[in-house]
Length: 289
Image (cartoon, rainbow, N blue to C red; front, side, top):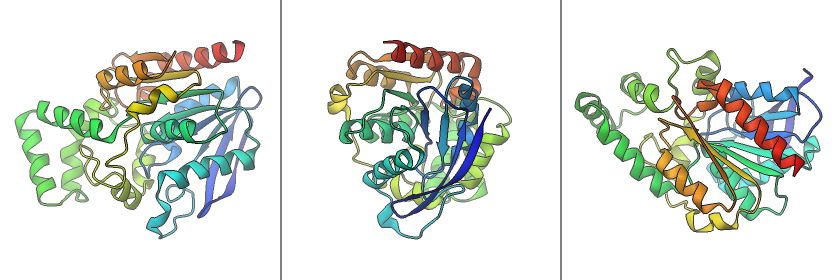
């Protein structure tokens, strides 16, 4: 397949991009975090057999510039960044995919920007930060007492950046983030190259509580304004719980919901043989309509 890589000027600096495949209505992919990288989305490259698939590392992470300016880390600037990428690569008609935070960004983009995509596809994306805090607390409460108490102690001691905390989190990650053991190399690259500065500033240091600048973000009452064909996906064991994804699906008129069995937050990496055909068929149906 044809591949292309380069740098793009966006508000605040330059971002690195990778394009795979050609033709069709392109798929533009937004990674999670905030502050992760595109690497863990690598399985989506297989969709390049029928269309151009574009990935980029959002400003501040991965191969993109890493400016030291906290004022840049706003959802408004990240939406402007999407527009800048589209302009630079000539992405007029697109399908817009977002994983986790990427889906939050994609929903806000569809609501607030005039350049609406042909379709919206999300994987494990909440529509409310307060709701995330509630169901992640439920997941924490459901953990075996020894695991839960260790995580709570380390968080109380402000040791979220210590190797001990990362080790304590692994049982949770293997249940609700990625159920492949060990994690694939492309997933590990995202963890290794993420920006903890952005993640902590916008989300917070704990996986279970959004306490950063996104803490009050909530678009549940605006979901009815999303008027593009939408596919809501998530894993059976997703940390973004299927019960919440069903509410997102119910709020978006005419949307489709797919819960991927035996998968969690990175369902496209865990079960690509199930996830990719669902997305491919959805895009084809939208285009034929």
